[in-house]
Length: 185
Image 1: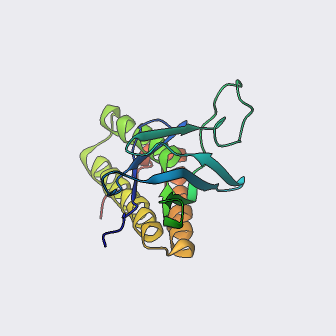
Image 2 (image 1 turned 135 degrees about the vertical axis):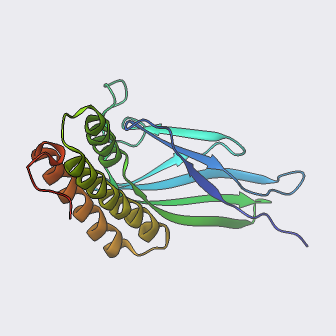
């Protein structure tokens, strides 16, 4: 007998204040699934259990995740490793679930984008611009490494790569995006 296969996808919302999760499950016809819930562990804030809309795109903010009170203005969601567990009851008898970990890097990506946009507007010589591009490429490599590590449950490695990317980006920004007089080697 066929059984349902639960799956979720984290979809970019391109907004530091929201987390988008789509249901990518394969349900039986008729679905016979009830009580769909999602548990989200927000770094630094703990676990919150919420209703989950099947066959839909679910968007969560700081108020729905319990970071701010309902009705308060939303704040950016923290970067870091999020643990997600989607579960639903099949035929009122068996629980099915899927678990994933993801590295959220939206705030770091926003800072990276800002530094990248400043690069094209700078009045630097070609060698320094080239070095700045190399630096930004290296930082981006570390950001993507953090995401890949978290997607593969290597949480400690993901956090190390994120911290390294953040440190490098802070240094890059504080050095006026690379216009320090050092030439590209």
